[in-house]
Amino acid sequence: MSTTTWLDLPADSPFGVHNLPYGVFTAADRPGRRRIGVRIGDLVLDAGAAARAVGAPSALLDAENLNPLMASGRPTWRAVRTALASWLTDPAHRAAVEPCLLPLADVRLHLPFEVADYVDFYASEHHATNLGRIFRPGQEPLTPNWKHLPIGYHGRSGTVVVSGTPVVRPHGQRKAPADPAPSHGPSRRLDIEAEVAFVVGTPSSMGSPVALDAFEEHVFGVCLLNDWSARDIQAWEYVPLGPFLGKSFATSLSPWVVPLDALQHARVAPPEREVEPLPYLDDRKSEPWGLDLALEVSLNGHLVSRPPFATMYWTAAQQLAHLTANGASLRTGDLYASGTVSGPEPDTRGALIELTWNGEQPLELPDGTSRTFLEDGDEVSITATAPGPGGLRVGFGEVTGTITG
Image 1 (cartoon, rainbow, N blue to C red):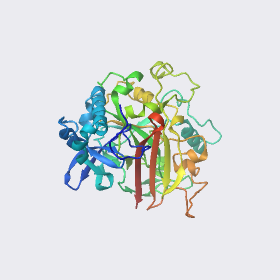
Image 2: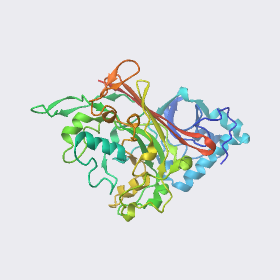
Image 3: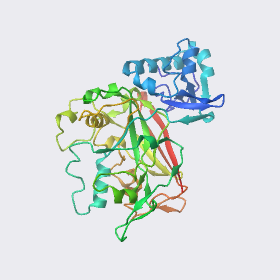
Image 4: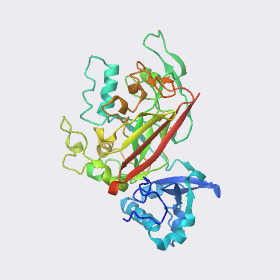
């Protein structure tokens, strides 16, 4: 696939033809009609209009969200991606396609697909170890099952929102250790979780687990995700069943879905595992699905962390295999997230509960303020890039949210 475009783009643009992430937008010329867009540089290609302009109209690209395209399967995904690249690289298409490009600044981006089910995993050994040390000092930080299976829980798909949507501070029951009884009110320990999410395209049948080597046949692409967390609500409610209201109030998703095929140069082996995995999770003889993504987390415009995704213990392929190991089916639009991405160093932790060690070590910001957890008006933004062909980077855009009272 050629990466040389007739567009005037910076040579090192993370949104060149080697990427071509998908999104959904509206624009002033048709404000009531959502359209599939493909990002190229700081422009958005109206994919359906471009297909018509080159004489290849596509119902999949004329849809109002990505679900029909995602459901069409991997051979179609690859064919559509090849066609889009051709339209943007072959000078013969320029006259037809150029009018279908809109400035990114002039469009409004929406949730790119209809979310079916949502699952959040807990796949960073560094994150799980840090939380174990915070909550179980003097004990083994990891639970006995952690290195045997990807731990996860089911979330709430109806509160997955697109980047830029304000996040209302949740209310719930809270009880600090010294409190004689619980109280109800706004969360005082509102946190972030910098994560990477995987979007299911091709469904599977109930009763048929998805094998490790079928990952590419089912997963359409990758997004950034912030799984906002009310730590005080979570701490009181999660024993013995797990997260509920402390997690379900909002999950922010980036508006761009990076195709899996754009990440082939980012594939790396996961960290060495001390515990031999059971056969359905054993990827030692498979092509690796660790990903070398470099995340950055900013709070009110200040960079506070650089979590490395390559350190994640469990891969997305293993997570999908475990998610379906009991025969659970996949649906188009299923979303599953990695869990907080954290690295080994203090400045690579992907949540405030780690960055401030549960509030004991406030985070000092360059503007002279400090934070333990989020205050009203705080804005959190997560960005990421990954290696691409020929030394290029693959951009993911950003997922941003501002806390409101």
